Amino acid sequence: MIATRLPAQLDVLIVGGGPVGALLAQRLAATDLSILVAEAHPAAQDDPRALALSWGSRQLLGDANLWDAALDATAIERVHVSQQGTMGRVELTHAEVGLPELGCVVRYGKLATLLRQRLAAGPVPLLENAEVVALHALETYAEAQVRHAGALHSVTARLVILADGGKLATTLPGLHQHSKPYRQQAILALLTPASPHNNTAWERFADGGPLALLPCGEQLALVWTQAPEQAAARLALTDAVFLAELNAQLAGRAPEMVAVGPRSSFPLTLKTMDQVVGKRLALIGNAAQTLHPVAGQGLNLGLRDADTLASLLENADRSDIGSSAQLARYALLRRRDAGAVTQLTDGLVELFRSPFLPLKHARSLGLLALDLCGPARRELARKMVFGAR
Image (cartoon, rainbow, N blue to C red; front, side, top):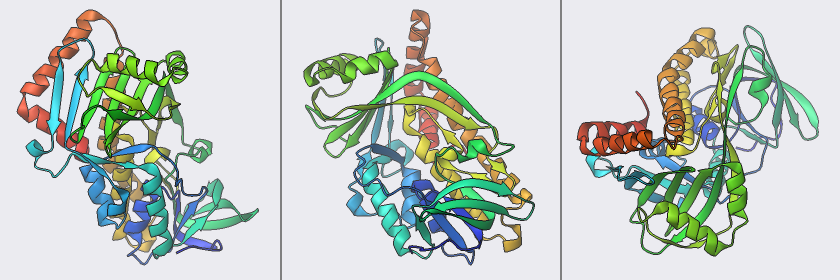
């Protein structure tokens, strides 16, 4: 439901109504807790970005009534990983792990619109255009200052959950953000292939940085990471020259690209918090970590954050909501998965960054060995789909 005012007291305040915050709100809707979702921004209806969701994430959203056929999701049935300039490659398929698909790709704008509609129609109040600008935590509750309708309002909550990528977490005492700039930009665009993609996603470790192609309808969504100066130069190229350079990087590992839509780019930085809980506070999604897009794990990790926290809150006594013991349990439960995925994505970037020829050949042999070892290949696929458990 749409809220028109801010209540004075709550059990749970969720800051952010994106995919992660919406999943948590929907999961808690059946409890008797008093909850509010505060969202500062309108739904990004026209956002053309493509999101790669694992089958595990697709299940979490579907179970929470946050999925619909109108999303026009494109299934990912096969993932092809290769390295430029070598024969090394590995393929992961949905069939060998017994799943209908490894994941799917949706447009962010469509998903954001659906989430906002479901929140507006659901039992958990959604306060739009509400920005949480400050938090002050005491032993038994936290006080949030919320800017809404041109004025500052105060609300207390047993637990405040930051579920967006805003800067609020970096201003709170006891929490420290670690930032690692990759000195890379990601170019985004929609491509038209010369032949059908057959529900395949490609991850290509090119010499200048990882390159991903995600099936999106009949097109392929490009995420091409490279040095900032190279990205600026490629954004300025004509479509024909850009496609020629891209196809040279692909070197026949993927279909030839014959058309490209508008191009955009953004800088890449790894951001992690030294801890994901504070006094009467929990961090999930981009508030807890922002990852490199290689392997497409960021949003999937955030949705598992929300799922874990929801499981802890669903059956808890009201008096335990936001307690130090409960928050310590959440941090412990998320440590392995978040740590493993963060190390995986960061490690892949660093491992494939070096152009040193012997190391390049060693990486190629590693990919070939992984492709030949069925158990290791299947274990990797399961971790990409469901996380580290």
